Image (cartoon, rainbow, N blue to C red; front, side, top):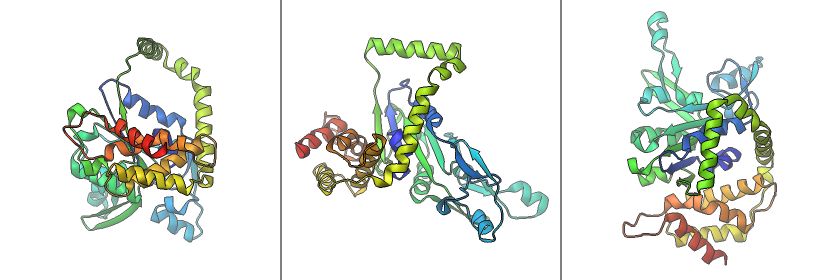
Amino acid sequence: ALILNVIDPKIGGVMILGDRGTGKTTTIRALVDLLPEIDCVSDDPYNSSPTEYDNMSDEVRNRLANSEEVPVVKKKVPMVDLPLGATEDRVCGTIDIEKALTQGKKAFEPGLLAKANRGILYVDEVNLLDDHLVDVLLDSAAGGWNTVEREGISIRHPAKFILIGSGNPEEGELRPQLLDRFGMHAMIRTERDPDLRVQIVDSCQKFADDPKGFRKEFLEDNQEFANQIIVARANLSKVKIPAGLTRKISVICSTLNVDGLRGDIVTNRAARAFCAFDGRTEVTDDDVKKVVSLCLRHRLRKDILDTMDNGDKVMTVYETVFE
């Protein structure tokens, strides 16, 4: 789910729920190592792209329109952590108090959304975050822009990021309408195979003893993975999905009584991204099978008397439609 969102950020982010201590946060933080460096305008607080018009702040656009030279630097894809105690001012940005007091000027101090532009915004324990903050994040993630209107300041800046949330369902559920706004939903369960558990414990110990050596051991595999992601991003626009498959995806959503059309759209996008990651240009039934549960399981209506897992329910309907 994480890799597909990197290939096509329009999928709309990932919500990862699961038992405590299953490596949710570790996996998300490791994602940054797989991402290529990006070109940014060096003195711009919004990580503006020097070439992609949609990813430029208004200031950079004006400078380019006036034929000014913009210095460019390569940066790692930003990964911004949103702490649970963050205020709306810190997230969206606010008036720069220092400049206001010392120079008597109204100036904008960018927040976390500005830092996360063209990167990843990670919220640990998203189910414990204030609902109005989650609304702000989801609106920015969907629209790609953050607008701040306060204290006589009116600012609009790009805020295109992949929103990743994680949490433990025992600590509380997310409101269904917020859950629906996440493109994909992964459920992580504790590994029951003793051999794999031993392997994980050994890896943790190796990393604790020699972090640099441990990273070096997997450098080649990571690089191969990263190259595969870069190629998939470049080829995504060439991937076609047959009309028959799109119809079957809509039949699945309709049969499961999924509200709205987000389920159909996200499943189509995710299947295309998976196909591109696999190095092909035409989506098959198998691509849909790989992503359909991740895209739809959190969109089903809750039935307290139902003992069947939502993911299994999605797969049962998939088998019926695709047989």
